[in-house]
Length: 346
Image 1 (cartoon, rainbow, N blue to C red):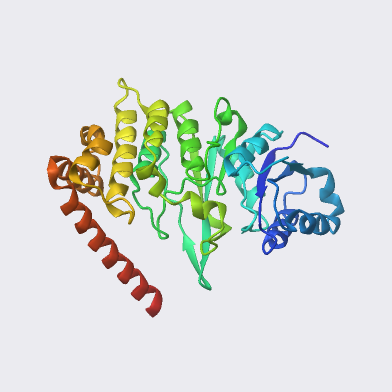
Image 2 (image 1 turned 135 degrees about the vertical axis):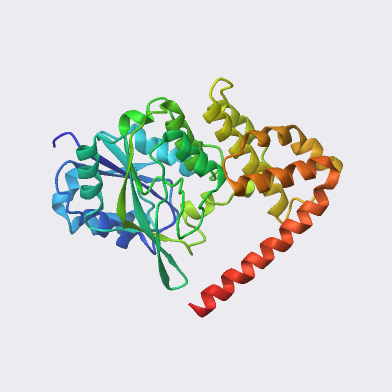
């Protein structure tokens, strides 16, 4: 088989309800040559792999392009993705969650765009499926690496209508960009965003391009989805080690852009302490845990949304944590009511 142009990495765990649709969408890709599919069985307790093997028999021309790698024990999604990267032979790498599915021409289109533009990263839009409804999700991005990283970390446009997604399933990334980078293997949260930060931090001159069409179908209402758990920000406000990881990846006192990115990350971490239901502290407890980060949020001053967050964080640091906490909780409930009303009338 020729050297693959594209490696598709698919972690498999507990997806027997969805793996058939996912596998068929992969095996029916219009990209017939130069593609490999790497399935990693993370000791799935159900029939996911058996169903995958049954489906593969119906596509004998794909068998030389398929690798099924089995872990000896369950190691989590971060380790599973690292296993996939280590076994990848392609010029570019992209990931696919095994409970989702893709359009038939997704990988051919993204690879063609990558070669035409000589791009390091190619993004595309996606379809979000939730409660029987399908919504178009436009991938917001900046072709400036620092700005793109800043948007991701500050949560700007993080909504289904214009979202700065850290997920890897809509990003075709040059394999060379993975050099020296690894997904976080401890826990099953935030391995995507930490990995993306490493890749973007590795070179601030990456060429990022966007295909303005949705090719990926994401099950937003699957509680067991790999990405569903990764988009839970609460771990940032409850695990102080995350700040240390962000510091190691981003902090560079000689680069103003990276200072802003770091400030955005710290702002997001501290902000989550206001809006998670299990994080009510006394003022003294909050200062002990987060006080040292309050001043770091001041370097984030490029958009109104983050200015407000930074102001409220400094207000909490001045001894008004509980007031800020309850105010944010009320605003969160109002936002949730508005969302439910919107879903009800649409």
